[in-house]
Length: 274
Image (cartoon, rainbow, N blue to C red; front, side):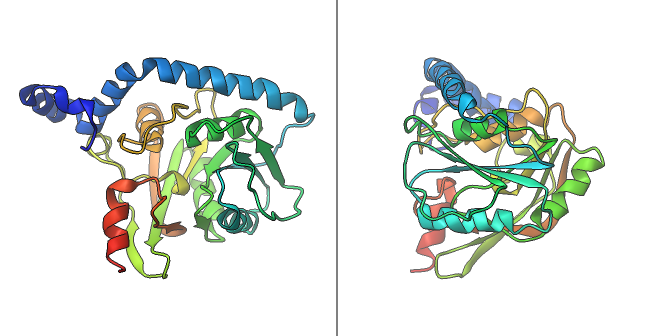
């Protein structure tokens, strides 16, 4: 799995746990124990940011769907991501950019549906930044877009009908491409919670959810070598209580590069274009 201390468990114990509950479930439990103090500190930091930012929003952004966009020093890519969100055929939306203390936003569209929030420092946590957007907005639905990816114009029009029909969590397919435009693959498969216990294929950029009180990401700033990532944790936790629906249509363009979070495939994918 590439996770450091998890390798200290006896092989027999690891294999038995993987067979019964799944390798990512085991790893997540391990990280929760090992980094419990860090996770508690992250929750406190998130609450502090909420207390600081809330008074700056006399009216909280309200729309049919909130689009949470965490960012850190990718001004050119951020502009493309934001424009793709504002260009949705569904226009009743609020795009909330949360700058994780980077201070490099570049030129963003002058659109009343766009709100920019700047955190007091860099928390190194996309989950914490997304939580800020969730907690400081009002909308029945929430979708997520990272600052280096883009949506096709029909993304929200594709996912919202499924949520209105009663699904709690919906995701579409992603087209993953290198900087030269060449295709890596299309990521998408139907949801099976037992299979999801062993691997990850639901990407946060393709994800839309129905808002409810327990909607929040793990705010812990996971090191790059830790797997699973925070979007896996959210999907696996919510899938225990919400109906998950996969919509097999490409609505997201995912940029594969050295800074992509999903590092298990990034190096190989980049190498294929050289």
